[in-house]
Length: 261
Image (cartoon, rainbow, N blue to C red):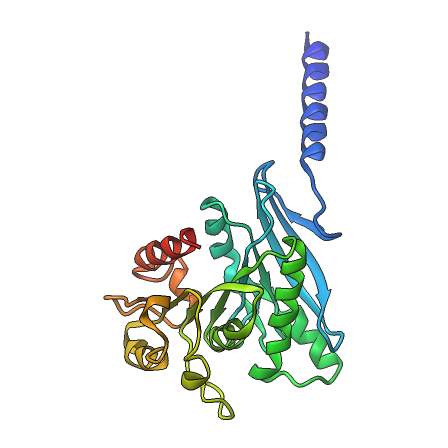
């Protein structure tokens, strides 16, 4: 009887492993990092900028939907800024890509591999230098999606870049900016983005509201969704983290905006 039970157990384990193997999927020659369910794939991949810098990115794909949301991190961070956020987006039915930009370091235990590579090559890693990283990611996603425009999400310095890039890019259909600001001495952001004619979602911490209102004041109100927290909130997309008080309200407004695009 014991031998019979042992054989049955081995068969069960073999079938389970076989089933899991059938569920595995390689996306764009990436490497499987994690698999939550048979319909969810989290894949690490690499693509290149115009100056040949490799951009490390995580693809979060749910139900075989091609990613439509590009997630860009804040200063000193990495694609790890969106580990929790991307999973929540998957639960809402959205596939996304989170990238490492050349200006950044680490977030949530994820090291910024693009920044490390840029330093090895002695490339400049200022905030504005990361503009071409985001543009390369947009091109990459645009091709993935059969030339369909995407939603561009930025946090802090990359939120400002998202507004600047999304303003003129036909490959971007909507912009989400968490705590954008006048971060660049050489650019008058307020006047540069005044002609935006596509949907934008902006938000920030409570104390940043006045400056954010001023930043988007020249854009036609019909295009602007501005979520203003009643709690203190926090700078950047960390507002969406479960550790942030009031994150539920940020999520409600953010997800409502996404569903309309």
